[in-house]
Image (cartoon, rainbow, N blue to C red; front, side, top):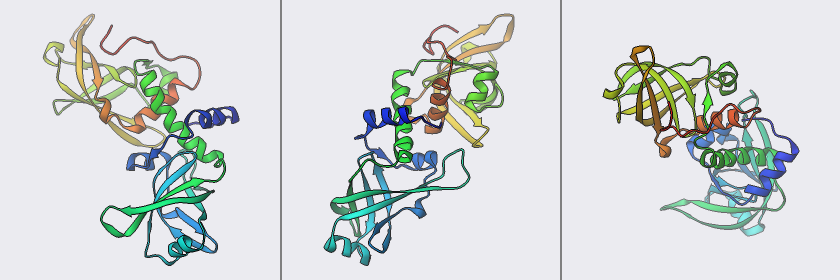
Length: 277
C-alpha cells in the first residue's frame, strides 16, 4: 500500500465511510494488524478485544463479558476508546491510535455465554491512519471490479512497481509445475509463455505462483487456461491466457496490482484475458 495525500484521504472518507470491512485473516495480514495490542479503554481500564469488522464510522468487536471492566462499562457509561495497532508494510515499528466511540449495542456471540458482540459508533471522524488503511482496501476492491481487464505488461518499470524481481515464474498445470515467462498480469488473469503443446493445455486448471520481493510473500492464484497459441518461430513454446478464479484471488495479489495500476503513468492495455495473445 502507498502513502496518501490529504486529498486522497478525504476522497476515501467521502466514498467509503459507511462500508464495513470484515477483519478476516487475510485482511489482518494485509494491514499488519497486531491483535494482541487491540483493546477498549474505559476510565483506567484496558479491556482486550477482537476487531470483527470496522468502517470509518464504527466497529464491531468481540469482548469477554465476564471481564470486570466490561461490566463497569455497561453499568457506568457507554463512552470508550478503541485502540488500533497496525504495522504498515513499509514500517518495522507498529503504529497505534485511539478512536473515540460509544457503545451502540451488544449481543451474544454465538453459543458462547462468555463473549459478546459489541457495536461501537465512532463519536468523531477517526484518525487518518484508519481512513487510509480501510480506504485503500476498499479502493482495491472497487478497482478489481472496475479495471479487472486492464493489463500490466511486464517490463523493468512494471516489475519494480509490482515488487517482482523477474518475469520468470512457476505455473502448476494439473498439479505439474512448469517454468513460465509472465507476459502480463491483470486483476482477472495472466498471459504466460510455457514449454509445451498448447492444444493439450487448453481448459486445464492452472495455479500461478508469484513471489513479491519486499514482503517475501508467495501467492498462489488459481485459474483456468482459456486460450493457447503458438509462439511464432518456436514450435515448442505455447502462449497461454489464464483466467483467474475471482472468488479465490489473494488480497495480497490484488493490492500489488492496484498499486501498480494507480501509481503513475499507464502500464496496461485494456484487452480481455481471453482476447488477443
